[in-house]
Length: 248
Ligand SMILES: [Zn+2]
Image 1 (spheres, rainbow, N blue to C red):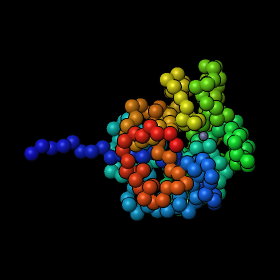
Image 2 (image 1 turned 45 degrees about the vertical axis):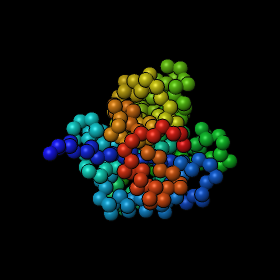
Image 3 (image 1 turned 180 degrees about the vertical axis):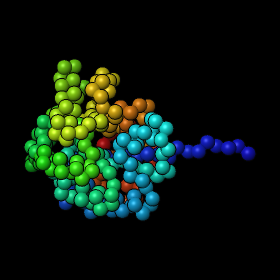
Image 4 (image 1 turned 60 degrees about the horizontal axis):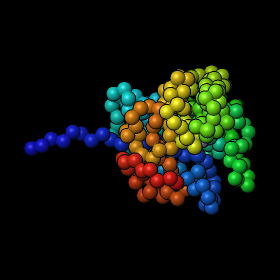
């Protein structure tokens, strides 16, 4: 009888942006999640036996031989909107689930200035809130200084965005900031190598797929959870292993 090697369980890194009391958006649906749905998703993870890993645990499972639980997931939230403090973090705390929020270091406590096509700009968390959540166990990573498309910058500007945001956030938190998330998922080999050179340990992309398909820790795929994802759509994304290259 042929024996097949044990399947590598898919490890999903979920990507959220704004989580709150949002009506159905007309555009940018992948950027919004209603807090009611978010809570259902956390409940689903709990009752179906998922382990919610920190990014650090995930990195060790993917690249350092730490055993990967059969069902595991990582929760990431881009941009650091103030609604995270108000809605998502209290829900995560109820379940005892870790999460990593990626901050834009020069816009702490300001509006999301890069979203110029929105009639109303959303507020980003301020320094005091970030420090309080950090003390409560929330993880924070860098999303660059100004949320630029990094591949369109000069090498000097790239270096400033990648190194400068790490320094600024480490000063703010008094702790190491080991994770970087490419704004717009925009990166190339030069950007990726700068992230590594700056001393980060992971780089998160917007490539769709399970994290197991990553070739190195600086090109981690994720799965965007969209406003329209009901529990069936959510569960399908959790269990999907392959990469999909379609844009959203
Ligand atoms: Zn972003």
